[in-house]
Length: 60
Ligand SMILES: [Zn+2]
Image (cartoon, rainbow, N blue to C red; front, side):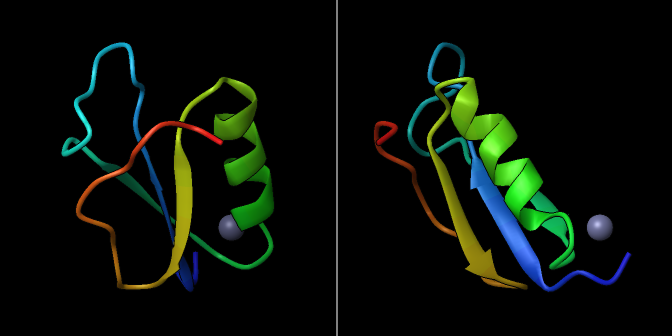
């Protein structure tokens, strides 16, 4: 796996805005992962690896 992106996300039912989970992804899979999380109603933000975000607000 050649990480080029970070998919930052959280489950708002169990994670506070500061509890950001990070999945590293290659260009081939980043869209799939973002759509998967987004379809579950989770806030998602993609950043260029190795950057991450400090917090994630509400989805949408
Ligand atoms: Zn991949």
